[in-house]
Image 1 (tube, rainbow, N blue to C red):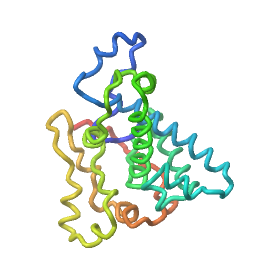
Image 2 (image 1 turned 60 degrees about the vertical axis):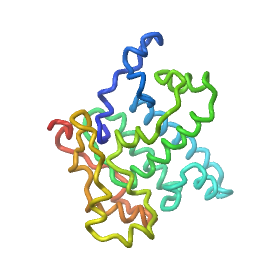
Image 3 (image 1 turned 30 degrees about the horizontal axis):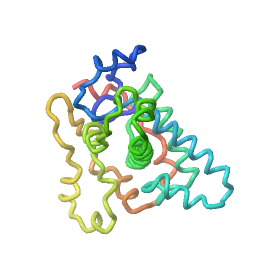
Image 4 (image 1 turned 120 degrees about the horizontal axis):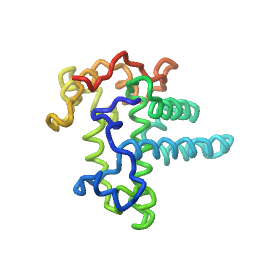
Length: 222
């Protein structure tokens, strides 16, 4: 199970009867059920990467840049495929809590962004097919990120990040406070995570950067 700022596994399963969906949703919350959203994004990414691998070198770089606009700068097709498999396993594995580093989060951000763009360009019928719980509403991706991602510091330009002082780097890692319903889980927003600087500076992941980190306890038990 993947660790996010807010527990994605607490969301209810999609009702069998579509007329019951509103009973499970805050009608003013313009976001899909988080598990459903992430599952769809990772499943789609695996299919896209499978198609890219079949290209045998012809235009691979350009396709990666279009489909994975941030993670293409540091990852090969193999790197991104490995990350997609790690994350999909972590999402669906229900025995152990698994923490992500910045390589995982940056790649996942790109996967989610691709689904958001697809959803946004679709008509209402297609939107309802993708995420029935949304009832065709516009998707507020920024709100989703604030609720579930500890931060998106990995998106900062290297020129800006490398000029920051250690104190400034800690300050930008501060996660927005949503009160008691959205605990910050500060121990998983580590300013000393070495993968942050590597992702920002577009350095390829080392083999030890690819696996998720298993935890020995439930991080949401405060």
